[in-house]
Image (cartoon, rainbow, N blue to C red; front, side, top):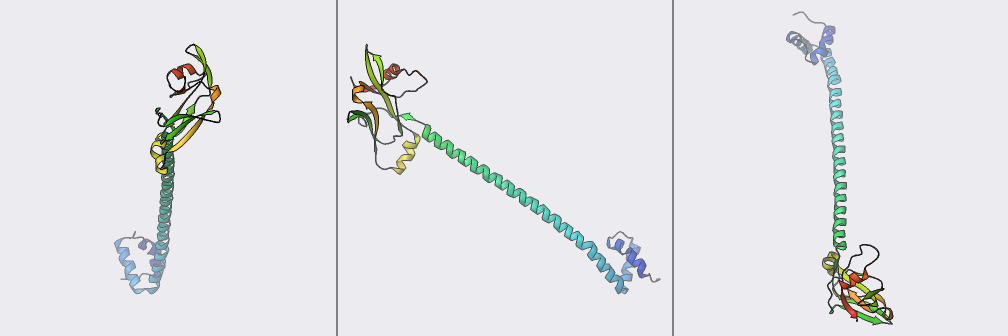
Length: 216
């Protein structure tokens, strides 16, 4: 076979390396490369030019993809974390509000609820557990049973918090006193739950639905 010049081989090397030549041309190039060191070196250089940039491009592309995926996962995890924190806070607030705001009137029991006097002042005293607070009306003058009287209405209340959570932190029963007013200005003290729907306050109706615990 006639020897092919190196110039011709070098011209077709890029096509040969891209594997787009015919079988005959491929055999011709390979036969020449076996006997020509210069063309073999040229082929190696072309391979580096063709392969390395492609590999680097793939690596850069893969790195970019992984970076984007990492950023997406990080953003997603951040959103999940923030959402979980918000839900937890809202849940805690809801549970706390339910526990604290669920007020229930403590039924009157003379063993635990007393009216006492000190220095001319009347006090409602509660000795027991589960107490959360007191609701009371200021002394008011009303007409009952055909005569005017100065009355006070109040009640002690408990909540889910004071009933189930508070005892965990306290072992002994508490004694709590609530000032009602000056004894000389009060004729009767009533105990009972009431709601203040607006003004004016219907003291008579509230008193009639409550229990007289002090006075005539």
